Length: 353
Image (cartoon, rainbow, N blue to C red; front, side, top):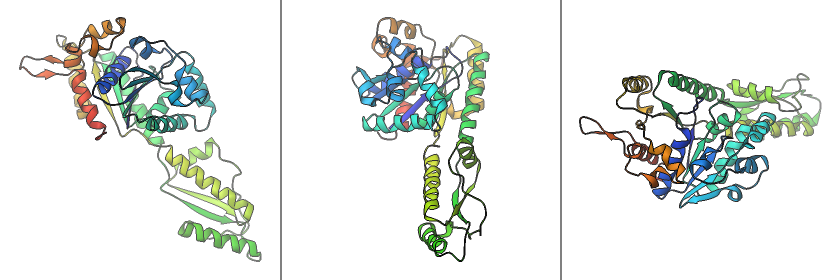
């Protein structure tokens, strides 16, 4: 299974249209596909002519199983719908220590349990906890962008955000245990030291006689410290009751590492490409110069993309031969862009699903 997050901090760049078009394309190719509407506006439901619903809220906030809140809309195609109550998910993420990471973990685990091949997330045009959760959940980030000067600023913003999130998701290379309050005349401390060495081997540092204490709880500052560090040193007293603290902190380190995954790569998706306008050609060249092969084929501007939802159809159903799907033929007879070409590239990323 692969997870694709469609993110841009600017609106009106074709995120939802791309999610619905590529998701339904996956489904037509026989891949079990889930579309997740993380935008409180609920535009995936609008485009697929289904009712908006509090699916994201019920799944994450109310903790209902994913299989009970997804809606099948086509063969091989399911939707986790959203509406204005999705804002409650953001509220909970801000309050909880592992909010964004929990969202990412649950989405991947439950989608895998439902035997999904591809999961596509549609995000609101902003950067908040939900966008960070989507990046943590995803294997690939797709950044749709219009080819206008003002819209390319959004590309810079989101790529910086991805880089910063990735930088801040680094984990310590290793952790070490530092025995403290070592009392050489007390049998218990000797016994506990032996137990530590038996369990952790060379990760146990030499004991410190009667010194610093282990912090009693794990908080956001400690997590920040772990993310900043190359190595973690765990002071612990050599008493039976204190060794439980060692187990707690090592579990926390393992959990932080497990939850600090980041997308393998991000791609830019140029949308609203107008082949007769010099600016769009110029901006496409600038994108390719800056990002190289991370720029996907452009999507030609096509009125059928706007017409299809009004008829309750995907563009594959409404106009499968239109330029938005098939691309356009340039003066050299070469086909340029289109969702069909992009779909083939994303299918290759599924890695033999």
